[in-house]
Length: 303
Image 1 (tube, rainbow, N blue to C red):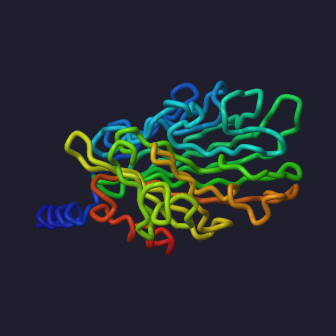
Image 2 (cartoon, rainbow, N blue to C red; image 1 turned 90 degrees about the horizontal axis):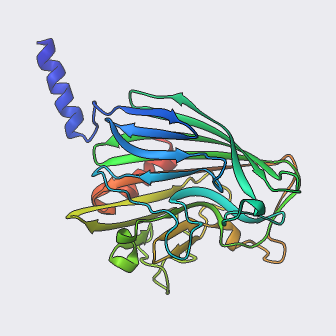
């Protein structure tokens, strides 16, 4: 009887979309952390000293194909899935050239690995030759697999101001993604926000529009899949307007639309800025993947 009841419970869990067999594990390999789900590589968190900033690459879908791209075309400073910023106290912590500024990983630790989640803590210092460091940040990264059709990254970052910080108006600010070319709008994919705006330009586009989330998806190899980014309602400037490009770039970018463009964004020494984002890598389109409901759950703190 116990075996029968256990079997019934397992069937219910599987039918509800939860995989009781999901094992999320991490291992440190040099200066990167490899994260696997059920033995298959999901993502690598790269923290090398010769990189501009830490980033995730690849970011693989449940079907096994990467949904992001690295340093392609005219924009070699787009590194898959990343957090960075330009025009910070005269430094550039976004575009290529370490001498212009670098977000250096000081430590990256695996706090939890196995069973249903991986937890990573990463401490970084924003440094530039000949200048004092303006910002120290600590990132908490939680990776789970809510179902066999969806993988999840929760990215939480606290930025501590080590001096008075001024960020001038810039389109290069904060959490960003560069999609794989074959998922971009330019190659037949769809980019859509919570309000149903699609693509980059125009009144019905996504560029410059405030929205709590954005999804970019497409069909390739006979499989529809994509990636959504959520902004948490507790974030300052929520919901930030999005800087989007049909070639596959998307980022909620508060620093491109400051309240006063002549002043930019000013943060005082000792202030802390806390930001939270969720990434869902999913099979199907946003409707079949339940992205709108997933955001409601995230905003309400239900998961």
